Structures are given as C-alpha cells and as structure tokens.
Length: 318
Ligand code: BMA
Image (cartoon, rainbow, N blue to C red; front, side, top):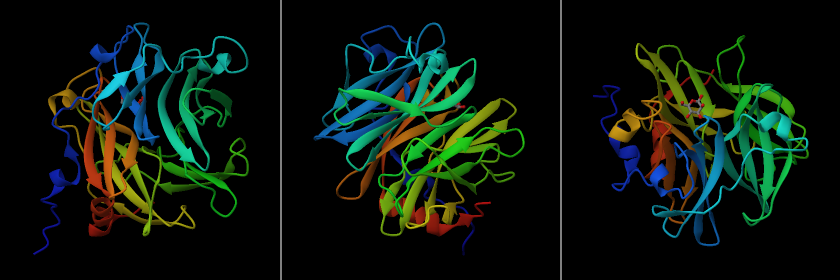
C-alpha cells in the first residue's frame, strides 16, 4: 500500500560524518561565520567560495581548496570583498553574499548578492582560473537574490533561475534569458511556494542547474514559518532540457532538513541553505550547504536518487 510517506527520506542525502567541514576556526583572518558557499571542481581540485560575516555584521567571500571535496584549506586572504571605489562600490558596501559558481562554456560565472542602502541586487563577476576575477555588471535591480546561470546557452540564449522579492506575489523561482549575460528578460515564473507545504513561505534557486538525460535538476531551498521562526530546507525539481520554463516535476518531499546539532543551533537556527552541488563522473553528487548560517557541511546523493525523488511524487509547480 502506498501510504504517501517516504520512509527513505534520510537516504536521499547522506551527511558526511566529518561535518561541519569548515568553521570560523579554520579561517586565518577574523570572521564570525562560514556558510552558503559555492563549490566547483577545477583542475582536479575543489574550490569553495564561502561567505563570512565580519564582526560588523557585513559579509565577504573567502576561498578554500580541497583535493577530496571534504577537507578544505582556507586561503590566507579573502577572495572577494565589497568594492570600495568605482561603479560597484555604491551597491556593495553593505556586503557581498551567497556566491554561486556557475561553470558556463569556457569560464566560471560568479553570481552574488550585493547589499547596499539601495537594496539587494545580483552582481556578476567572471573568472577562468580563480586568480583573475573581473566584475562584469549588476544583472538585476533591487530586489533580487539567488541567481544561478545554466552551464551553456539554450537556443542561443543564456538562461538563469532567479528569485525576485516582491510584496505582490509569493517569493518564487523565475527563469530569465539573456543574449549577452548582461541584459536579462523574457522572465517567467516557474515554481511558487505551495500552501501548507514545507516550502509555503518562499522558494529560491540553490545550486546551479545539473544537466541529466531526463532534464535539468534544480536543487532549491524552501522555507516554512513556525512559531519559533523560519525553517530552511532543500528540495529538488526537474525542468525540460530544451525549455527550462517547463517544469517536469517538483518533488513533494524535501531532500534535506535541519537535523544535525550544528544545523539546528547557530547564528540563524534551523537552516540548511545550499549554493553548490558537484557532480562526479560516476553520477554521485557532493551537495554542500551552509548550516544555521554558521558553518559549512557536505553530504552525498546522486543524479539517480534525485530523479527518482522527482518522479516518486510531484507537487504542482504553480
Ligand atoms: C536568506 C538569506 C540566506 C540565509 C537565510 C537564512 O534570506 O539571507 O543567506 O542563509 O536567509 O538566514
């Protein structure tokens, strides 16, 4: 009998036993937190670009490198800090946050939330080697967060998932298109929060989309409000390969919720928030998440498990 209860919930993402894999104690300069990191594999190394709060409450981005994806060494200096002069300074001076590293064609696109008194908007920088980094443009107005760009153009256009903040509609995942990475439009709303569901308050893109034969896997975060505050969990959806605005399935059940002590307690309790998933040649996935906005964690899953989870039971996208 199908009870509708997934008894294998804990099996979808297996937490690494050595979690947390990175904390402020590992950082050789003073920071208050280590969380919400982008991670990619580059030249047989894993490169992590993590967010840290400074003691003034504003965020910067640090770098850590690893040979195995589990044990990371932090660089002596931050990777990116808010610009202090020029065109970018005006929109970054409250901090830069939640970097996604999106491999796209021959470069890496670094999408980050830029905070200032003008609101939060998305900054785009590019790099080919994680040494030379060039800020390209702000690719949204306020209010926008959580941009992930697809790894190649589709029908000649760059594609991204994004998450506008607006009072007029639930905080939802949208898709937008661009001819040049700078100018974005043709936006469509693709996944909205579902009432009385684990993601009923807001949803937002997490890791950059993962290409599979069945479609694009979209690991996203969803938020539920409780009497003691918001709970951040992770879910997964599947989008059409040729037209990602078409949602094939949104898994009804989450794939990860805060359960470990460092996920339940910390700067912001009850948060697992992902900006990164690294696909290995054998189809396994290293999923990275910030826990309680305080430390970094990793777990393993696989393309197969996430696809099965999407096809197991799907909830409406809109
Ligand atoms: C979101 C963002 C994330 C953070 C999460 C939980 O709105 O600010 O960076 O991890 O809240 O505090």
